[in-house]
Length: 217
Ligand SMILES: [Zn+2]
Image 1 (cartoon, helix red, strand yellow):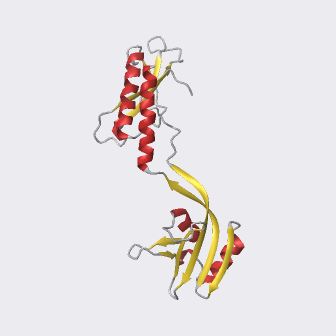
Image 2 (cartoon, rainbow, N blue to C red):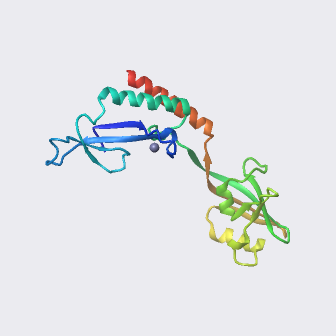
Image 3 (tube, helix red, strand yellow):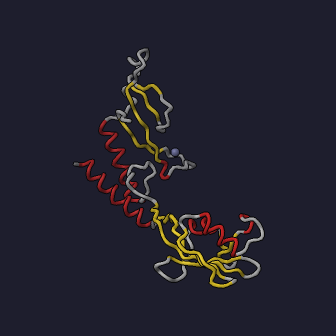
């Protein structure tokens, strides 16, 4: 969709949920014949599809529009935030398919999980997507990962888990009982990794600074 003008503005409302109080209005030609003579433009203050007829004087001039963008880009360059989502190439998270080697240990009272990337070979914190695959959760007080028995039919045993994994998930590569208390599963899982927030801020700052230069070009 192409509009006559997109114009960033700050509402100045201290209770505003938008970072920096930034909003973007969009402007278009008024095609309604009846009032188009008096109100040649339409404006949606919050770019939300709620259009108001406007006069020529209501609309920011080209210079005011450039200046508003300069202010927005300077704010973004300083804060590292992009509430108007102008720098749409920025990815906030990345997804990778990873092979995890998971160990399930039956303590007699519950089943604990620990593991790591197969190629790395040592244990590490388990990402949320791995925990979700294993139906496990992190115990607040011990930091251990344990299976949530409420998600399974009772009784929950390693043999039952092995059956569920081997027979139901084509991403399982290996699945074997080491002994009565230990089950090993190697499985490919799509894991979402949030990018380092400081890395994202640096990318937003760089793009905002380039946009300021582009305005002056
Ligand atoms: Zn606001």
